[in-house]
Picture 1 (cartoon, rainbow, N blue to C red):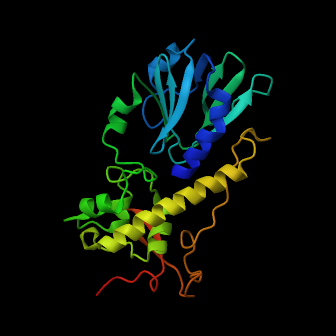
Picture 2: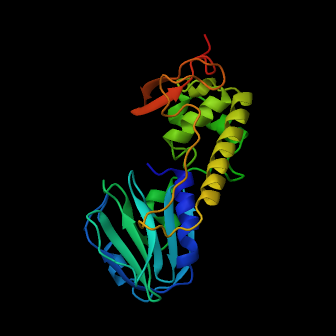
Picture 3: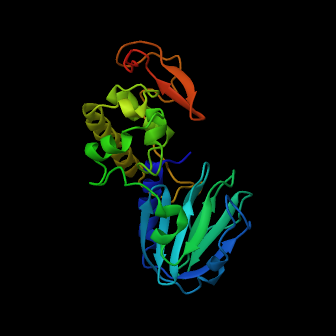
Length: 274
């Protein structure tokens, strides 16, 4: 599933090709993804793409006719094509945004859990109104996290994955950050100390920043021969490594379901307090 670094990489990949372009047409080949595709998209002809941004895992195209909100869902991806390319659409190519210059943004989504929506102003859309701070922003501090954590009995893994607390800390990066902070994923959130909050905020920022930088340096050209973006390889400490030895202590990595998500951790490096 694309997480915040992948969405940020997608943004940086497509932005040079789309910013300043004028939309010629938006072709939708399916009426509904996770939600019904906004009918307003069919009226975007002549709209100029003023800028692109990201909020949480949403990619936003800001135009003079309103904002286009894109979410990659669980299996979505974006690629850049040109009018002279072979534009045969595959089974899962659901949306094409075609510019007057011939640049095409194609959206592929086998599981159809993503979205293409329209809003006059994206930040006023109901999906974005209740979002917490960006993890890499100055608003996400240890003091903020500590105050938010008081009287919360939910497991800390679920807490940091709650988009109303902080956006974009998906399953992979929650597992990795908790490991690096030495915090068991099942620790009751209200039991987080101020020092643990300081450590957790710091490593969340470090993990996400490193992943974004890695993606940016690996992605040399967003136009790939197969039309797919070149997402970067992850170097993971615990995620997906059940029964492998912990790189720090040699203990076997364990896995269990927390909040309906597979969670990976080292039982020695991330002990629950007794």
